[in-house]
Length: 391
Image 1: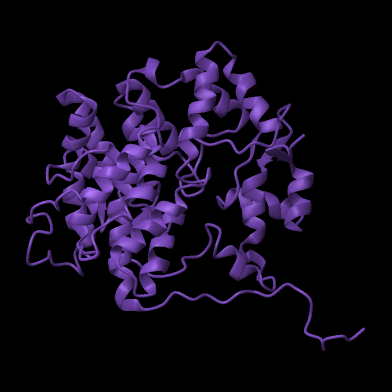
Image 2: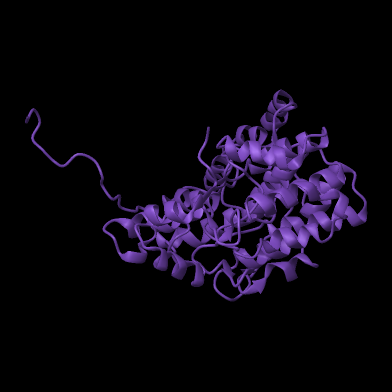
């Protein structure tokens, strides 16, 4: 039996090493959420939030600052790309939800890829798309039944020896080609997806907004991985491959597959509350709900779900999450709902996320390059130094 996702005040105090009065002060300061318990006198706390808070340097305990900085703690480095503040997401100071209302992914790329405040001298999307590589075309047949991630990891590295691994727009078009299993094209990315999936104009516009919202999200795991690779002096292509690799975990890129599994159970007639409870009680990572950086809900999810009919949003699963977890849907849940509403092939929610986020990976790599190597120090917690063979 896995650990409960919600814990009582006594356990929260024990993990934090504080009194109840201090625990309540954390709640009043917005550092923790108190959820209703069995009666009006009791409150429960999310175990993950308590554990995260325990790792932060609130009380300046030795070594805690370094650990907290790597788990939604203090910023690791300066960046001018995206900002999460007061429940909103901004790309270079522009509200991402406002951009989603009419901008294309290419528009956001132009915004994020520029250096400083001035646009580049030449539009990065003015050149023609690269020709399809015969080796990649042949290998693609072997991945006809593969997931989008498997296909991208295998095929994106297959490029001619003289291919420009530092052309941002060309690499984005290549990424679209391997994810959609098509030849590279210079057409807007949302139009490429719409053609591949035979969508009408209304669906195409929904897809355009979703791609924009996925473009960047501060120092998330895959963007940080891309920055680390770029910091070594590697090409943008290699930085993108680093971002792709980080997408393979269930706590990031593969979260949508976990949501699909729960959704399928409810479609088959299982009670949503029971499905969610079984995952929670079994200690299974529950994807799709809540986000540490948005206390009042993920604005990306709100934008997407508000444009879908209620019947397409699995209200039963949402209600179960609100009751059992005290959380609302995040962007992974919203992308899954969008995928199912539009009737896209399984795995397409991940594909949308990955294609949009490729713009951010390139932006982080470009921003990091002139700053040099990322090489943090470790807080050593192993055996103290001693002479070999000493008792």
